[in-house]
Length: 514
Ligand code: ATP
Picture 1 (cartoon, helix red, strand yellow):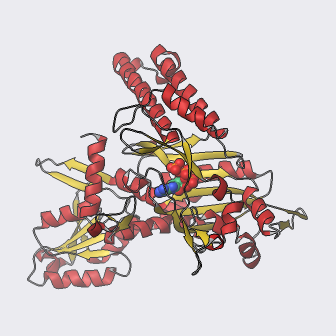
Picture 2: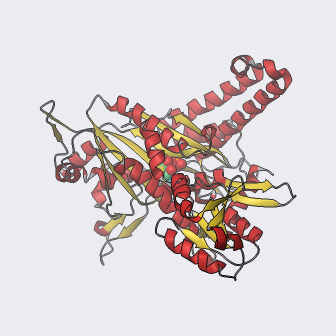
């Protein structure tokens, strides 16, 4: 099965089992907007908790806030979003499809990289045991030629974007002979800039002065509350402010399911540090955030850093943590060293001081900022795509299983009486009652036990407890593990501790603190 087919199945599966629905589906949906269903909301809440607690609970010097979506319009002038939150767009005149010029070029580079990887795999097959990948990449003429080509396009693109040179961007698309994936033609319009902010009117008067924006990022709500939090929380630099909330961007090309949406949720943390110490903290957060992802156990190879060639004018270091989605490695999280740009701009635009008095150095300064910014929906997609598995069983059947890390699984435990009679449902209900305050549990007595196990596999429930006739005599139940499908008999009073050990965030956090 190709990755594309697998991705299609995953999208269908997440709708069929109540994870994600297209928004306004009875009206044929709304482009790039999605609703989370009953299980999706649980998974999303668990991801939020993992992130929030890892920031706010684990770190004594990080606190969380919840600022409003609507903000004073001057904020977006100060932050640069009114003037420069643009994407370069280009249309294909034949298909009438709209693209981001930089994304067309990135896809082109990704294709060259794919070619290089194929060449490496060919080499591996040819040389067998003796294959030295590093040497092969450094010497094979085909690889070197492709690499030089990719590097050249990447450099030209970075130069054009940095210089805001839209003509050069178009020339590069023409030079690379990039064709529209729909029409197959190279009949392109010029590249234009397109502002991604949604605007609306505040109050009943619809004139320029009432225009406000739906926030395109949560970070500015943190910056403008910097002093409120610092003072009321008696925070000392270095300290962080975290926030989870909705953001809105009128994306030119919204595609790839919940990867790029027009309404989405961000989890951002701004860490305020002494000027001059920012690169040390940048390195620290880069490492901490990757470890947070890897601790979930979805496969270390699925993550990589992508250091930015194109730095925004206010940043002095930036990297993305990329995840291997079914459509390739793409940005999951950004980590940026933003200098004193944001606080400095708000100081300038608001006329209020955004300074911190450092009792250790007896100096006042505008702190520098390291930002970690992750899309909750992208994180959701990374979990779902790493978890989704269509597995051939020994008996020839196929099972679809979501191998969601147990701490994040929407339902932790299914309680299943073997039959609907003989007092088994009563025992099952009692177990449910004892455990439902600790874990999200599901009771199911319908259909054969095999079918019920499949249903739980499909939603990623890590444990199933089966109550049978023997339970009435020995107070033991059968616990079945989702991933291995192995089963064992355990006393009823051990169920809580076995599950607790596997689904508690505590172990993950302690592992991260080491
Ligand atoms: P991209 O290059 O993919 O457009 P970006 O660099 O503009 O992303 P940031 O502004 O750094 O993204 O936003 C931080 C995070 O917010 C991203 O790493 C991503 O996880 C998430 N994010 C950004 N835009 C969207 C979107 N349209 N839909 C879902 N998540 C998004």
